[in-house]
Image 1: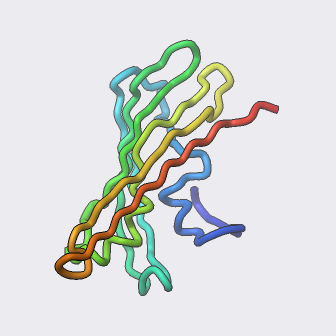
Image 2: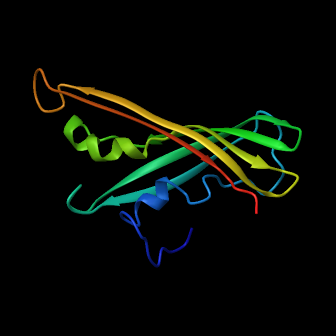
Length: 143
């Protein structure tokens, strides 16, 4: 992704963590066990932040490639998480993990099964707790 011209919902910055097509494949057809990374930076504009930028790394690993369907696991992590737990709260929804599927016969994206689950104890002092869980399922619809 080079540029976002317009979004109908939310910040354009979210598209760096949530690619509209969910996965970038390497140049060569990946075999089982092949892994590759995708680094990206997200800037937190108000009301979530004050313009700070954070570096993330997504790691993809091919788990299976059978019957025309490639399955890759994806893990998203902060390269250098903020020391203050409260500063991590707006970043948690970008930490997707799960699987993305690609139809190798049709040469197109097929589906995604992603989730984020985090718990930040004492994030605003003793006795406070931030918990977040989101599950995302998406399937390409054939025309």
